Amino acid sequence: MTQDSIQDNWPPKIQIAGVSSLQEARFCRNAGVEAVGFTLELPRGPHDGLTTDKAASIIRALPEGLLPVIITYLNSAQAAFKLMAATSGQAVQFHGGIPVSELQVFRRLCPEIRTIGRVTVMGEESLIAAAEFKAPLWDAIILDSSDPATGKIGATGKTHDWSISAQIVRAATVPVILAGGLKPDNVRQAILTVRPHGVDAHTGVENPDGTRDFVKILNFASSAMAAFRMEHSHT
Image (cartoon, rainbow, N blue to C red):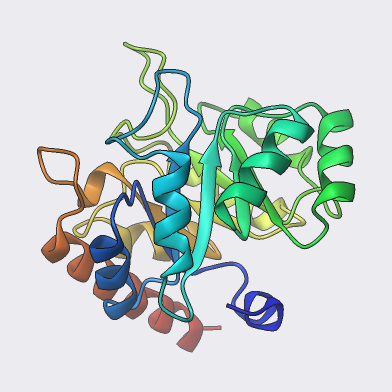
């Protein structure tokens, strides 16, 4: 994917996270998905056996038009720079946050890489948190859910208060991607309620063994595309 095509296709309207094979990535593209997320450098070790080398080999073979997003808890500019260089990822989601000083260094090291910040939607305070994400340091934010029982953020399968997400979208100065418990049977309503720039699914399109479910991906993408068309026709 060229830099111009990233510009034209930003932000991705449909992203599938947790991809761990080229077969999954190719199916995503055929289903109309615009971005795939690779989870690397997580606190608990590799996700579904996905290593940096494996992700790099998948990304090198990605079909045209599919944006590779690296999802990571790294919060060091140098470490993130090395990861992006090793994988050829074209966007990075700093899922665990990153200090402003480190992000400034990262942007100087990787001016062409898109940056996505994560906001956990838990209450009205999320509006204040989301307002901190601004250009030119940030290119987009992703709104995710937490699991109060485990403290886990992201890939919880839980939705959050979409009315707060909708307020964030209206106030944000960068594009907003909605995540958090999205699946084929609720993504349409989520888009029409929140009006995000894009949507992201992880556990909502997953098989019990952690691989992507192709039928769920197809249904998710189809429902999302229909909802975005409907939203566009009403604007």
